[in-house]
Length: 356
Image (tube, rainbow, N blue to C red; front, side, top):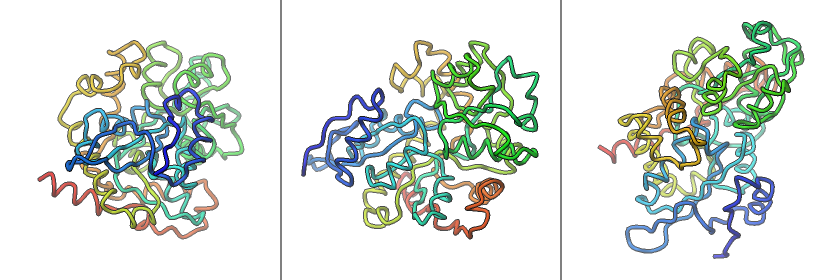
């Protein structure tokens, strides 16, 4: 196997990392984030997974699985890479630069109508985990999505799930996507800065960004979709979001490896369901708390209700996602989507049985 360049500086140099990945597309060899050996003592299987923001709480199971040692237990060397938006993780996956992506399930529907066969193999969540925030300055002018007209609204990236959900909330409340301006501002410090400077009037983001904004009193919550109840109220049903999704052809040709990934992630989801936010926060990299461990734990606590305990797709979840996308996306609205091909429970079902 060829050796690939180390990608340790990926978080700081996303563009450089992406070009490095292109040079080794479909090559599973390389330096992995968790480099454990298999039980026989040989080198473990190498898998690259691109995450739409490793430090986002909605994607917490990815890094937590590594920190708990569950990838290593399965004989896997999983290299976790990071991009600021889920749509970029999607791009890395379909171009063959990585074998898996941790991002929103809704990308599987969007890709299907574009002729790409991608499926969720482990469903991390049953709600978006997203929050629509408005700046203090704009809070009087924006009391509901009906007021989005003429406003500048932050999203992580064009074509991202935050873009999808913002457009849906607008259309549902009588505002067309062409009547407001989506602004790609990422998450974390870049989102906070845009809100402070007035570059955006509000926007959709996740924890720990939400916790930071509220702690600094820079804005207010307009719509909270971090819980199943919040998802039901805003979107009309459960909205499966963060997941491990992969190209169907790769899944079918690498079932033993996919099963090991499912085993590891299901163990993590179960572990999360029996531990407190403080205990979860303590397992994560120290820099994720940005110097405020208490605030970080609070961010995790606020988002925990969105996660599944078994990795199984929530009942009626795919239908809710399809309904949301059809409301504003003309490509999906006029297309027939085969929801059965957008996810599988084959691997999580086996993982559950193996775990007893």
